[in-house]
Amino acid sequence: EDRSSVRRTPNVASPEQSGDATINHHEELIAEKIASAPLEDKPQTASHEKRSRRLIDEPDAAKEEENFLFQTKTASAPSCSTPLSPSDVKFTLVTQFSSDRLWMFPYHCSRIPNDVPISMVVYTDKSVDDVYNEIEQSGMCHANFRNHTTVQTLSTQNYDKGEYPVNKLRNMALSAVQTSHVMYIDIDFWESFNLFSTLSSPSVTYELANDAQLAIVVPAFQLMRQCREYRECPEKNIPVMPSTQEELFNLVQEKQVFMFDPTNAGGHGSTLYKEWAMEQYVGDLLELPCIKSNRYEPYLAFRYCEELPPFQEQFNGYGKNKMTWVMQLRQTGYKFAQLGGAFVIHYPHLDSSSRLEWNKAPKQVRGHTPKKVHDVDWKKYKRGINDAIFIQFREWLRSDVKDTSRVLLCDDAQDDDAKLWVDRD
Image (cartoon, rainbow, N blue to C red; front, top):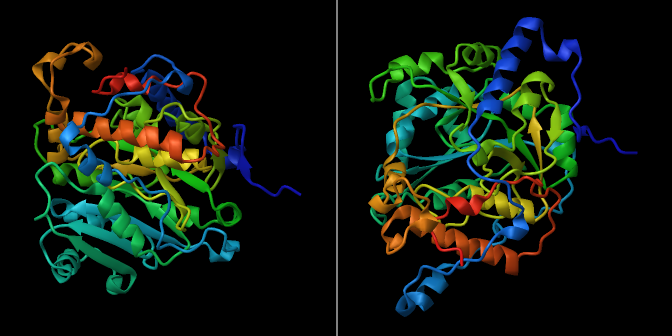
């Protein structure tokens, strides 16, 4: 008997599940925003992707090759084949951040149950005790939060500006997990109050216990900055950050909240926002039928076990660091089901130093597509460097990793190559 509660075809929830007419009006506005999100690329199937030359100087090729040993498994984690019952499914909140965003962590404390374990890594030259003390001074975390929170630090001394080692930090944070499952979020995405209670509902834990390769998508939204001037304005932003679905819908109606990120349709465009708003009830799981872009990078709850692909540490700074992980999840057989009723919301901070480094571009690119620009040394730019690493990763994924995909690219998937700053000959 198939007891699965994951829905494969959207169906309208009952009135008791979907709310009253006022809420439905708000939901329609969310759907309207999704429909108006810019489409960046022309459709293309995966078979049309072209290979690219490597942007590596020949004398250094051997050294570079040694550094490009991509990984397939999380060797230090328990086996994925160990049977679980639904009661075994427990979650750790996993995150990482630089010291200038440490102030955000107490707001996560206020949004999650006190007994949820936390594993974090801070990119800082402060000591672990300094980090604990700074969190305690906020007064927002429960008295014994140290008993539930593992803090690690990574010194900034070995990295250049703009080379934020994001994937190393993520893997470090994962290495301290003691629960069966993980909810991974970046520190600037804040949870809805009900996220962990919803993940822990019987229907969700049943599915997670019975499929080690089920990844739960938590829909991501973004709040508009609440000050007009270009500055950090936490005194205006923080009070408006929604924590419930009702608050979120109200802000959608006021045009203060949108899906994340409408300027990057590939990043979260495979998430079924319309169905989430209008059809899914709290705890409902809706399976994604296909993926619209290889740039898809949702926030996921997943089982922490050996067969889980790690984040590839060759990627640092901004760009390609999480989408490549999701690409590998998909190719190795993971399926994706989005969670009804819960969400994460992006805090509207100013651009990080890593993002500013990524934004740098040669003058020749302005007003032109990269493939029409010649005589540019792309290795001088962070985006070009990460694109070259991405090409190597993609070719490794095709040649060395068996394709056991259960979720395919959509027939009208976006042309992700159009965004690459590399030759596609």
